[in-house]
Image 1 (cartoon, helix red, strand yellow):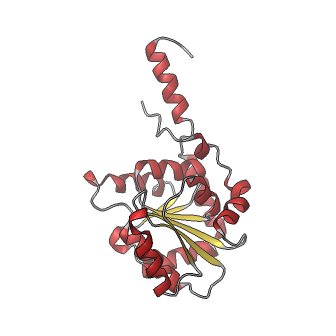
Image 2 (cartoon, one colour; image 1 turned 30 degrees about the vertical axis):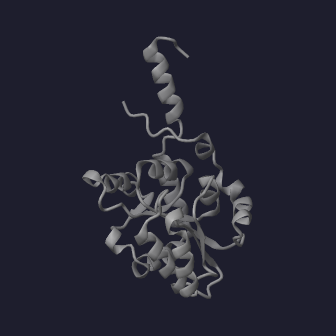
Image 3 (cartoon, one colour; image 1 turned 180 degrees about the horizontal axis):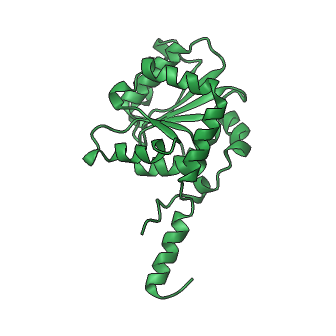
Length: 214
């Protein structure tokens, strides 16, 4: 019996459109920019951090696109320095950690992310179009399997870690920025396979098994 990944109600009830203006203001982002959220998970990911710096260099001078990068606390100072040295400070906003990940989801038009089970479940629940970069050393390559759950329905693209460079990701992101209809379709397709009621379903199943109803 599959119930899905139980998620925080703040995620499952997120209305990205209504929260967007406030989330962008809290992050110091322009209200009308195209915003890419890049995250390697709670600890960050070296390859995605490097890609974000490269994208910042690529898009320097383009005020219409911004990158919010969750660096991971251990990498934050080094990445801040790399962003400055690359002249990418006007594009890339590094954040070491989000107390409320919903701020990042609400602010973003698109997410570039690892493909852990929790992250993939969240992206589906909030209807977030994404480019997924599975961690190549995950046991049994399970993140590639996770990524396929969204990629196979058109809710995401899956890119190998070795190919997740600014040179490869840049054109993909630019194409999606120019095709808002496809971006919206990806979000809808991702949401269609989400299981926002997983926590409640699992709790009810436990109550049923315990014979206490509910």
